[in-house]
Image (cartoon, rainbow over all chains, first blue to last red; front, side, top):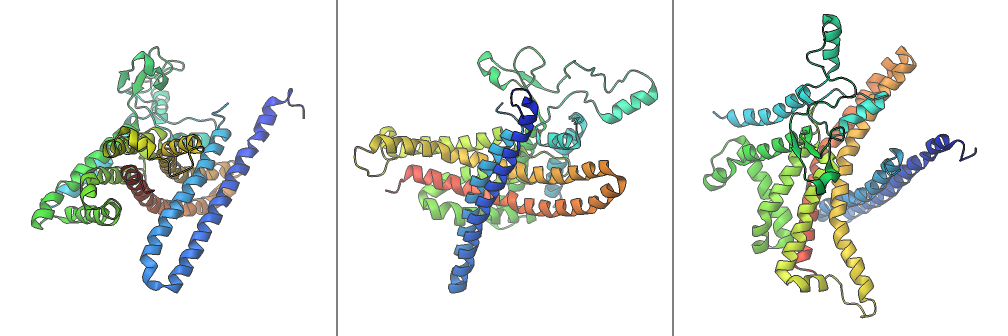
Length: 85
Length: 331
């Protein structure tokens, strides 16, 4: 496929990069939040009195990690919609 | 008499929805997804919006449309537009006409509705806190405000400082919460699903960080205290890193709130669009996919309720932490 001749086709396929990027960002968020969930469950099992404190901290940390994932999603949206063309 | 407040709350929610439905133009896109995604964009309110129903009536009536006389190629007449000075021409919203204009969009209506909701819900709270008598709404929001004071602001900022900053964080929390919740009403627009609105809120946090930090520590001390104790050779690099970190934290606040709010709506709109796309492939496929799509969309909307409240909490909690770190840096 010649890039110079079929520019539009190549641009359409290049948007696949946006899809791959969004998926990778979701993987990162899933790993991070999964680890937090695992540690939270373990900590609560060891010390049930600390359940409330662990719950509050884990929710805040999950939202922070999800914020980072959404950075990536916003970048892929920009690519997919061709805003930065 | 005790129904006045719930009635006012209902009016604050229903009025912007009705005005949006009456004055916002019909969305037109080249495929179902494009039309649905236009619901995420702010819609400029027009005096005579071109509805699909209006065009239908004109065709049936046989006369030139009185409701939809916006011809192709001519820019529509907007409900309210404000002229911008030349140096702000970057923010021109009405590109079809000469001169930079700011337009009234449906997002402004929902922000005003969130502000009015704050007034309506909290007007009985001081009396309840003083005398212990108040109706259900006052008791509910008094409990909410006390929870924010005792679990979010005072543990981080301490009694005297926390008491001075409490109004600002209460305002930020309930403003963001009401805007997020209003976006879940059918026919309503989420004001926080716009980068500019969340950017303004994050800008408030940034201004609070800078101004309160410089007032509390002295203008020069504030910038010098950003950098922890490092060997003097590394100091310029660490200074750049710390200043970048200072700017990136509110930026992250903005992106986090915007992406969470618009992402949820994007997923629901995509699921609805799937029905149309599958329906285009065949009637049976379309009808069979509809219950699945709707069920999944309902599930996502339930999560959206939780995300709306969580994101308001996260935004306020992080603002509190940032302002506290500005005033009392821990090194």
